[in-house]
Image (cartoon, rainbow, N blue to C red; front, side, top):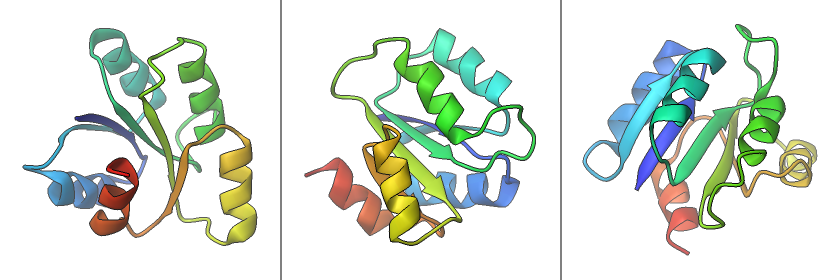
Length: 117
């Protein structure tokens, strides 16, 4: 499975990339421009998207909306990965079209459990 991960924080990108290494293929990017450039060139099964993107004119919800306009396969996973946590944020993420809500810090066992259920 191949992941496209968008997060404006370099440390988060490094942590997630190291945790999934060897199990998943991952492209981790900082900007929405990089994200959509890679999406135009590659096929991904999983989109892991930070909600609060400080370096962008759109947030993770806007990114998700643009991805879904592309009518990708139903088997594609859309995962919100954010510092915002709690039931209200989980509900907001799921109500806005994400398949799964994964608060930071990244926990590999939770990620795996969702992907393989």
